[in-house]
Length: 469
Ligand SMILES: Nc1nc2c(ncn2[C@@H]2O[C@H](COP(=O)(O)OP(=O)(O)OP(=O)(O)O)[C@@H](O)[C@H]2O)c(=O)[nH]1
Ligand SMILES: [Mg+2]
Image (cartoon, rainbow, N blue to C red):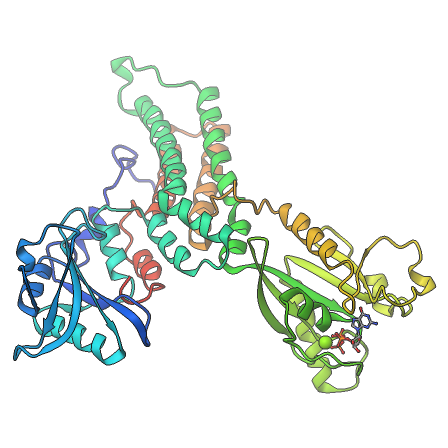
């Protein structure tokens, strides 16, 4: 349906998102921000308008929390309602807006026992705080304009990062690199819409809108930017979840031996019985900063056992999801039957194992990476080859903007809307129709940074957090 293009492209403020949620100026939340279990210290955090007043009621020390300088720690005791000491603590007040959430925040470092921490939290709750939902501190930071949605998501990525590269990418997103690129795309779209609407709204005022050629060039430029970000989706998945590398091949080729070598300890049973590994086994490893999910699989052979056939079916399904396949072959043995069908393309490395033994004539002159899991010969070369193949996915520190699945969904919709607008321009559609498509694109791009008030996005993003973050 056609809607008026006029004014609808204007940037929607985040306040539409805020309006529906109980945020700043609302209640005060509290949570244990450190992981559950015993530790040297634990952190209980409160955020909201009553945070400092609650601290005043539960803290005994030289000075009162209402008089603390912001961001300075003070030693004292948290006491129960009957004035019994609960724990000796360090407490600090972070006054709005210079805090994580942009609200008044109180942080209490107490001793890290499960019971002690629970009691400190409980006394905060008894004095008027409410238990925070998962991710609610970061959600407040977003709703109060401390960060855009991509930065809030980067907080989760930062917590979950397992390697330097993943950490670096999350840190760059937290700094706002992805947000900047998204804002540049939005600005481009807003500008384009302004030109198109100038033709609709002000012909009599003599505003000369860009001609068709210029408009098309502007739209193509925006579209390229969106495509460039979309191209980082695979990289983003690999950084967040790890690169999926599947080791497969005939039984007894040395797959499990290779997994053990690559992770550095005897994780999987190795034996000279054919068909030892029946299930798909996953281990994580950090290969020069790149997070890897390594899969050992059931060996491929024609089998009469239902159990083994199920294992082989699992091997085949892991192979479908692999970013990189390592086809392991026993070079001492003849070429396996399935080898001819093997897809030796860009995402497969053929590895001839057992180079400490004689090579079967089938393999002579055959180009492959030669290793021995027994002597470790060639393992470093194989690692080098793995890194080189992964490098083709641009998984390098300098390309650290990497979108996640949610961003990909928004950007795909934006890209489709740009395509429609582009076709419309080609077909000479009227400006009003082009404006509808460009507005769709603008809205989809805005969802990436949370500039459009969409309640369900917030729930799905912040629901992934831990309590207290
Ligand atoms: N000489 C020699 N033996 C090896 C080497 N690598 C593995 N083996 C032996 O080959 C046999 C099979 O090794 P595994 O790692 O269990 O082979 P697999 O491919 O996982 O076998 P399945 O799980 O049965 O499919 C074992 O006896 C290993 O000790 C190697 O580099 N040299
Ligand atoms: Mg095995």
